[in-house]
Image (cartoon, rainbow, N blue to C red; front, side, top):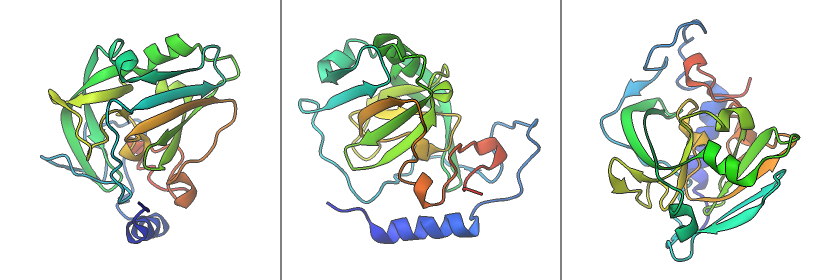
Length: 214
């Protein structure tokens, strides 16, 4: 399957025209609903037009790069550690937000304990089973509410929402929360991901309306 070129072109146009930007709030203000967002009751589905078929029997997660203990997890090895839970809000760059999403999975900081990033590791690069990619500073990934999730609101994470396992990075716009996670690489230098090279912000902070590259 190939990505939906029309969807990608539309979102690149949003980046060029600044769709959704309102001027924002002062940086020292932090309302629960970030500027330019609207509260949504449902959980919209957004992707590249590809829904990869990833059975739990075939799912693997590779962790490599600037770490002391690289490894590849299968489903059972992931589940043996995935006992963490968190309730968070979730904000999409397309201007919708949901409140009080309950996630179950593995906190990223506990994954870090398993792999032991080297002192040189400062960034993390994520790739997915649909060919998607995104990037984050290691300091953001180490936040207390960032996790690899396999359940949402008490149910297994559906294929449409990134199951069997996706990233959840609540304090960044949702394109940083890669679905269908396949590989995590710890890096000394930053590397832009799929939307970041197409005009979207590298930092993606909802409260400063950091939607697009400037």
